[in-house]
Length: 189
Image (tube, rainbow, N blue to C red; front, side, top):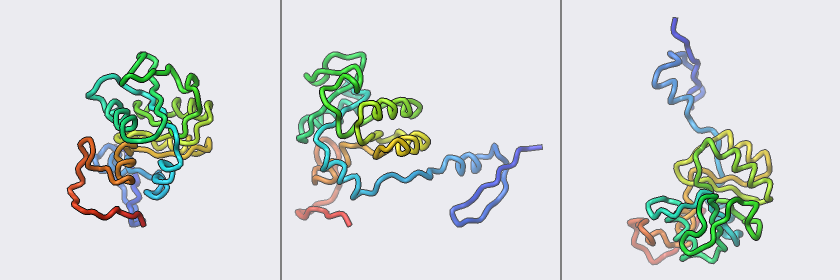
């Protein structure tokens, strides 16, 4: 006999289906954790004075390199690069861990596998940083809930470069073209 799963749909109805079916797998993978609103993310970025990039890479093809380049060139943030296997990236010193930074960063931007996020949360809590920002394409709901239980603000599956550029009318820079032609600054509602 095939294992049966009971799925609860968005409209509240339930149905039984084979547990191994593609639909059952899809329904189990649905995201339930909801991160901060656009206005809250904007507030996080506006309040911040420093950003640590965990998983910074010296490879120009990596998104962490691209994000570090943007933050160093287009923001006033003090940017710290964290990678235990590098000494300098983009002419900046690289720190082995968050504990080695000269200050507690306001945001810890993470470029690590989803399975590594819980251990990074522990490091963020240990140094006292208030916000963990997990990059675009990385999702771990359990880690997000765990981080919140430790008192952290959590942003997940969002690019800090894209969000910063979006809120500062710079989305056209460094390869993100909005396709919108306007002289008016967009206001969040």
